[in-house]
Length: 114
Image (tube, rainbow, N blue to C red; front, side, top):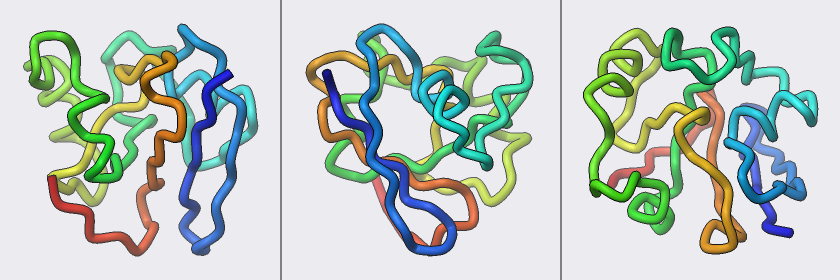
């Protein structure tokens, strides 16, 4: 099973088993990652699953089209502390290629550029 690491605002890391087919948001909610609410349930209607993607993982988190959808960009415009490495966790689906994925939660002191 792929591993997913959350970098927390206090500087700690939480590594979690992430079942294939679940989104980063779903994994976070199921494992009580408090900063990820997932209020809309993954329907691209909020930004409560906003995360920062580690640069080495950026390309692997993009959809097959190779870029973030316009709908995701619109929702990210509502996110707190938007950065170039920002994604919505509901749009990142776990698979074997994402084993080891690292994401940081808003408020975490990272300056990841993609």
